[in-house]
Length: 600
Image 1 (spheres, rainbow, N blue to C red):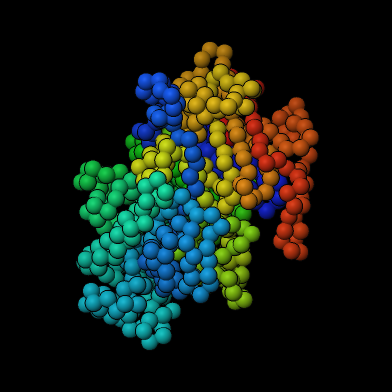
Image 2: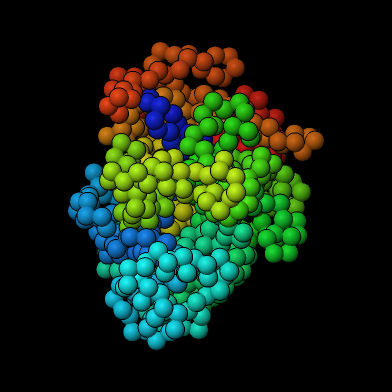
């Protein structure tokens, strides 16, 4: 039997939700989970006075961002962003930074980790233009865009670059030394600000696949440091738009360096049905077992929320979910493709998880069994994620009185149909990646991502922990040794359980603690998805814990809304409703031992 937890807690004010808490699979081990916690080794070594010397399980959640762009991304640097990786890491570590538009900024609380994931296509072009880089000026095209920018025609220079990108014609082809120099600046910055145990500066980049303008982007995250990362230059969409070719490139890197990589897809809601398609991109062949195993090996987690909307679910695919219509971006992408309703099941994470069960039954492997994180996709070099102090996600949309801060067209620009457009005012402040790890290091955090012990939030730093097993009882949710017991008797978020013992049903322990500076909690929900005897998928929602004196009825739902204390006039709220912490125990009342079941 397989289950996947991917659900949200609702906060006590209507403005914020927690999305995609976890992904938990109950089945045989997958290739993606090559790092795990052995229950027998939760406490290691001989008995000593201090019981914490050798415990091997994650005891802290770390909050960070795996998707941030600086001036080294051409679609940031050539539209006003002047801050580079150094400023990005400094800001994430809690330092004050002046933004590209002159706004002084500092995070309320530092992040624990950051990935600077600049687009690999013509990496560092804007900084090279700004500094009149000699290697750039050796090329005819480089001199042309440089002179346009220096003469005040930056918009024309950017459009010239964009035209080449759309045609996938690399204007600097054959000049790998230029890219390598910029890449090595990025890796140098990551080494400079990486401080194991205190702050993790990951090395990474974004591979920006966009066939016909449809979003199939992936962020590539290195477990390694500069010495290994500098042995390559990042792959780009000039090389390929096919994720299978990306995986081959990643494998070649690992074979060459002995390092480790994973990739994080994002924005399936802007893929026009291609992110979780039923056929491969290039050959158009139906997905097979090898494809499924490869995808889950290289892409164990998925970015489910970020600036361009929520990718968990949609009202059309989850009609019984009253929270499904959260920050929905379901119109056109970056190309001219017109979005249609039939694309939705191949765009959203929750539906993909259910469809993955059908693949498991049909081909013996699940291509869509992933954990979930959130991240910002900010193009300002500043990782900002709070709704109550929205900073803007691209430099022209930073705090100002400019009307385009609200009216700028973000997606659907190339469509002839105005209804396909999404605007700046619809941009989300999301999100944050939450990772349960043994330490704040590249290795420990990357390993946790690889085993999917992660969750996503839309900006608020809730602390959430979930375990699943066969023998938990209600009182276990209040144990003083909650985590230790959870690892010994079950599996954490992202883990796998073996087949159900005779007569047993899966049981879940859930703890959720509000952000110290955030709103109280409304409820904890679990969603069950399953495959029936006719291979049709179904979905059902249960409320597991609710705040206040509200009741959960016999059908597993609380019909009484939490209420709303938001004052729209001054954008404030009162924490007078909801609970600061919710504890939940849930046992599937209808489990019948079916091999294809998901819980979310």
